Image (cartoon, helix red, strand yellow):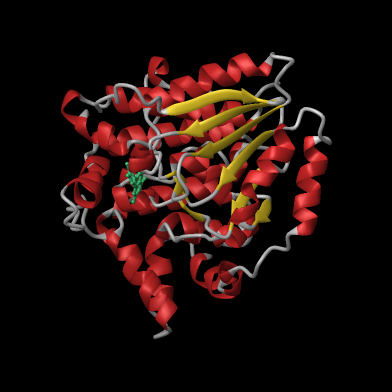
Length: 360
Ligand code: QUE
């Protein structure tokens, strides 16, 4: 990926009591590069122990996106040299996701506009009520469409969502609006996007009230609009409670309802191998006990899907050639064996594992 000569990819500054991080690749919908991951990592480490910083605010340049995902194009371009760059990117990205989850100061993420994949990883793990969505929010975990599993802790979030919402969202890559995101456990507070600037001003104000009080007040002031996702929950819970991808597809075929037919058609576009790996990973994640443990498993899955060629083929078809006709291997769900799925979960060499551990 060529570096712009002057524009920094992350704008980093201190405003009042807040450390501010603004993702700054608006033409690429602020897609996350390895350089950005490294900048954010070292800045968060420095701010952790800086008494002048009371909180961190993450947002994005422009009003179209916080972040459309990881910079998968550069990973695609590196494929002829093996999975080294992809592994470096994922290792450092997931480590950052875990740091944000455990950050000792309030971490406020303004999830305005598009927030997918890597953008979710920078936002949705924050604890303490600072995950802000707006009327323009569009969240999704669309990785099965490019031959991957919902990573950046996606299996952890989706596996713990109520009912079968997470299984549905993770397999289909369906979009969430702001209300949906709150219901699925990806966000805390819904505000009209016009309130973004005044919220940031209140948060940065060095003489202002406690961050948690500000967030509580905004949450109370702004009711959460109806969630289309919750309206579908009875159907989702019925169709997606099945034990296998084949059984979910069969269940969706028992009706001619528009939603079920469209959902089935969507699933049939995705990588069969990635679908089965995603279902297994989301179902197993809660029993792993920590975000870090889930990230370690996701790393194995992504590395193996990269090396199997599934992820490069997905990126080629959706983002490079844009023919939307990936040649998945295997091409049919029924040809993906349990052995193929289990092989994706296999440990890597100890020196290649991310080795993330929860704090004790
Ligand atoms: C799945 C993904 C990504 C995606 C589409 C998917 C992803 C990603 C982008 C993306 C979108 C617009 C851009 C850009 C990247 O799309 O991770 O640079 O301008 O970054 O179906 O995982």
